Every structure is written in C-alpha cells, then in structure tokens.
Image (tube, rainbow, N blue to C red; front, side, top):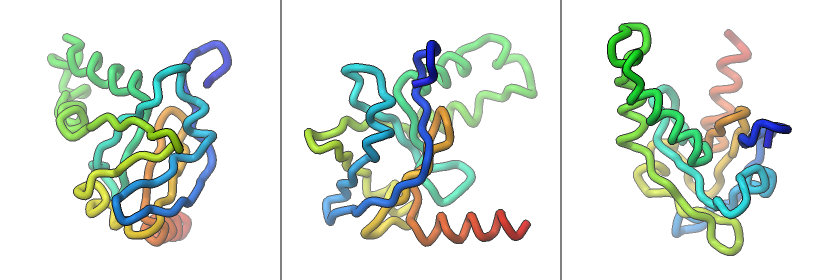
Length: 144
C-alpha cells in the first residue's frame, strides 16, 4: 500500500502459468498490497487493448462514485460511458487458498491467454496479458 494512503500499489511484471481450468497465481506482491481480509480483485476486459484490467475493490467503488457524481453527468468532458462500460463488464474474483484466481473464459479469449499470463503493475491498477501480446505491445510502443 501507499504509505499513509491506504491504497494498493501494484508494481513490476510477472508471468505465471495458467492451468486448463483458467486458474493462475496472482503475484504474491500484488496480493500483499491488498488490505487485510480483502482477498478479492475486480477485473474486466480492457476497452483499449488486448488485456484484462485489474484493481482492488476500492478502486471499483471509486469508479462507481465518479459515475454517480452529478458533475460527471452534466459535464461533456467527464462522460459516464467509459465508467458504465467498466462497471457493467467487471467481475470480482476471490483468491483460493493458494493465491490463485479463475479467469473467466471470455476474458481469457479477449486477451488471447493460453498457458501463461503476464501481470503488469501500473500503480493503482494492473493488467493481465498473454505474454506474446504484451511483448508485441511493448515493442510497438518502443518503436513509436
């Protein structure tokens, strides 16, 4: 967590095996950033890339609060459509005793994940990619 701020900080990049049931171990450093007894994350298929977006449940609550914020409803620069798409597609997933989650098959298909998944820490959020898709996206961004 951020010192004194009480929010997770997801950092670094990890690649873990995915079994035939879609189970994958969430990196220990990601799990340890979650507050106390809250052993869940929220995920949804990215709106902008071939990845799965992830965050702790409090961040999902933050998105919901912004969606319900009156200023957001009347300001064209703060349109609610992206937040509504995120909320309607998000699911919460609990960790099993071994720190694994089961990714929904539709999310796995969206990201092109087969036998391995790459977790990419992005501070308050993280992404889950197929390793080859992540490598391609990084190569493309470095060449831009």
